[in-house]
Image (cartoon, rainbow over all chains, first blue to last red; front, side, top):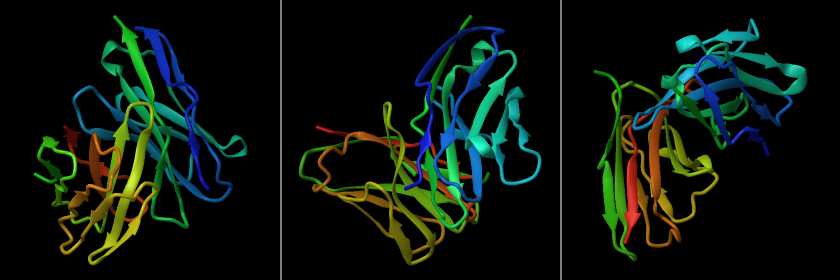
Amino acid sequence: AQSVSQHNHHVILSEAASLELGCNYSYGGTVNLFWYVQYPGQHLQLLLKYFSGDPLVKGIKGFEAEFIKSKFSFNLRKPSVQWSDTAEYFCAVNVNRDDKIIFGKGTRLHILP
Amino acid sequence: DGGITQSPKYLFRKEGQNVTLSCEQNLNHDAMYWYRQDPGQGLRLIYYSQIVNDFQKGDIAEGYSVSREKKESFPLTVTSAQKNPTAFYLCASSNIRDEQFFGPGTRLTVL
């Protein structure tokens, strides 16, 4: 069965630090990849997505992610975090044979002002 | 204003009662989904539907039921057979295999 692993369950950083959140998936075929964010008290919303093309994807609020097919990874990065980035982040994968999206367990990010 | 609405925001239920959570979308999406979110568990898929009058079980369908009589609506019933129903329930919709748009959620508490 397909699975998505997010290795960091809880990350604490100071403002202006660089961020990288890991995401690995288990399926070897064609995938669509997503990062979602859930700010405190708000809806889950899309940060960025990868379907094909340039493996370096840019999203909202200065986030980017790189798809590395050989490593089955889709890590999320931001060069300088802000206090407002405090949220829970979810990696998700859709396998093209299927209509489901599988979510990782999430990473809680806490930014210290 | 396009989006997904879920009601109610908070719901309390006594043990042994069935309860129905509402989800409506006006995004003209074909697919709709129900997830359960528990702390540290991420989002777990309960049921999904790709087309009216058709739906499939997700990973944790036991104790839940759904219907899809209209494209816009995908209500979820939490039955008394669900052993641990207290949770945050999220509804989503999408075009097939594309990004999902989420509602604000319903927090269900069983007393």
